[in-house]
Image 1 (cartoon, rainbow, N blue to C red):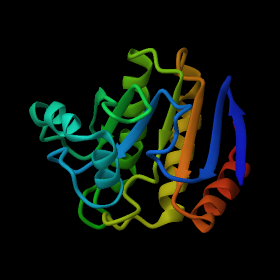
Image 2 (image 1 turned 90 degrees about the vertical axis):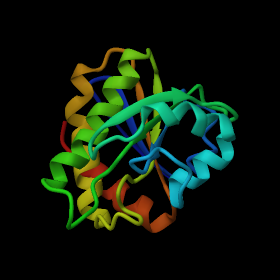
Image 3 (image 1 turned 90 degrees about the horizontal axis):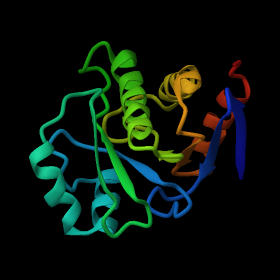
Image 4 (image 1 turned 60 degrees about the vertical axis):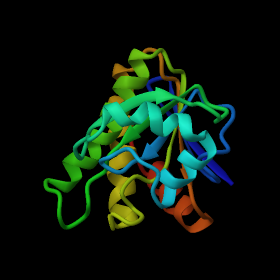
Length: 179
C-alpha cells in the first residue's frame, strides 16, 4: 500500500517496507546513533546491509549531535548514498520537535548538495528513542513539505514505514497536509 502527494514538484510518498530494500532511491537515511556505529533497529539493518566499509567511512565523521546529518557512500547497498541523522531522544533532548525537524531539513540539504533526486527516510526517533509516532510523523511530513520549495535536485521523498499501522498514520497525516 502506498500513498503520495506532490508539493512544489516534490513527490512525497509513504510505503510499508524495508529501508535497505529501496533500490530505486539514490539515497536512504539512517536513523543513526551519535557514534555512527552499527546498532539496533534501522542503524543495525543499514550497517549490516552496507557492509564494514560503511562503519569505516563513518568513523571520522562521528560524533554527531541531535538534529545533525552527515553523508557517506552506500557501499554494498543498492543506493549510492546514506545520509545519517541523529534524531532526538524523546523526553531528553530539547526542543524535541525542532531537533527532529532539523534532521529532515539537514538530510534534504545534504541531498540537494549531492545532486540526489530521490531519498528514503525511516520514521526517525520513533523506535528506541521513544518519539510518539503520530507526533513524529506530523513533524517529519510538515518539514519535508515546507522544505519542498527550496529543493531543485530532490524530486522524490519516500517514507519507508516498518508496518501497515505506521504507514497508515503517515498516509493519513500526508493526506491532511496542505501545501
